Figure 1: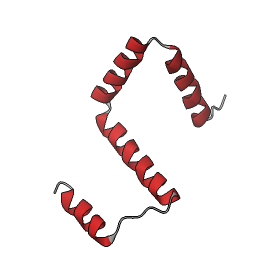
Figure 2: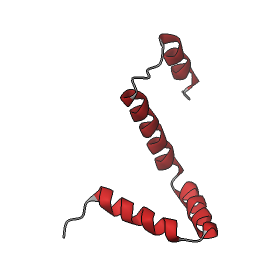
Figure 3: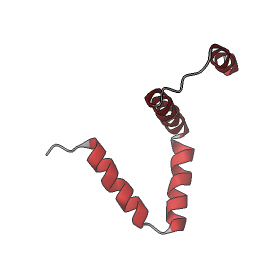
Figure 4: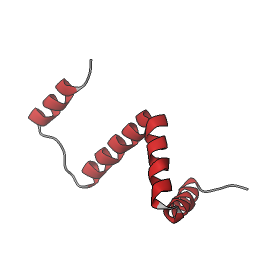
Length: 72
């Protein structure tokens, strides 16, 4: 049986929404502790995609400031 990743993710999120608030919080804490790099990368990707979709690009000065702020 072949599954659609987007549909599967939506089902998992629907399940997450049914959990008590303290369980949701514990899950998010666990996720942040065990997958911080993946979450950071995903958040960055989604922010870049949103900016591209909205034609919100950095100016040359903003681009340079961003590049300079990256760790070496």
